[in-house]
Length: 489
Ligand code: C2O
Ligand code: CU
Image (cartoon, rainbow, N blue to C red):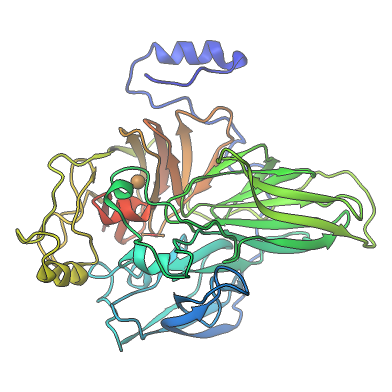
């Protein structure tokens, strides 16, 4: 089995497991033992109701800087990549009014919403056509860092800016001294502010089509002052269509406190990979006044500064830094001994063609059919050899699996390709039990797990009722086959 060269202390255990046969994904990720360390969250009391009106339409924004040309973004509000904050116990009533030229929806990524609120056209709701509205109403059950985006023409809609960050507060036993969202998302812009094609065959069939301008919170750079010696909570959100980040901090000590919004017993941040759609909450102890620290993306040849921070004088004193962590998540805990195991292979598609009704992809009628389906004309990828869609319009392909609500499952994921695939399951958070290419990562909970080239992983969860999408979050990959759904009854 192609494991990376193990670090010395693990050599014996690895060598031993390697001999047991290729069916083993990887040793279980080491502790913390499940449920240790984190204090329980106080009982949730009903809070207020947030009435939001999202007017999805084209707007102008200067993405290339205040003196640059205007770009035509598609957004939910007058802000590009707005951050919405609520408290645990609050409820949401969000009206989506669609003034875009094509249909859309809102998917609440990572939130365990009732299935009918999940925002997947044809699967959980009819698509919201131009001029139509849809109302989403639910009470988020978990704290954390989430985001929302359409589930339709994702490269084109998210590419033009259709996304927002949603923070559900109420997970901090001791309040942090600052709470800052860093949403990473590149823009695919030409120099005149116009859009470049969001999907390309070269990109879709490989690691995805990258943006031309790196950006955080919509802009080319991010800098902020923070209180000296303060505890700074940073919420890293990878909103990019494609990019995998390798996040780390220079100039200050940092601990990971949540993964995809799910609290973890704090551990020191060395470097952490975030595939598309993944989030990482970290707590950084700010240095003395006048000094600074930087959050870097080390995945590129030249590390790229995601955010630069300068400590400003404050009343805080220097003291030891040992974060106690957030309140524990309140997720149903999978029973690993009783869990049923199901394998999922993520691969290139066999007969990659996927033409629509036999029409060449440049036929205008093929375009109309595809717009109705929210899928592209090409098929490059498959899950367990089936591609999305299987060819019949508006008829769902059969589910990848049928599960029983309330039962525990272990999914054995295998990326058979040389490209990374961040795999997302709707409506659930799962425990990541093993990752064949991650040495020494502590066990964590997530809604999206990054499978690096040829990597295997095991995830465990308790199934919740509904029809849930299961797909790669490289936007061009899900649009070209690497998507399916699970039926949980
Ligand atoms: Cu953010 Cu179907 O996903
Ligand atoms: Cu993928």
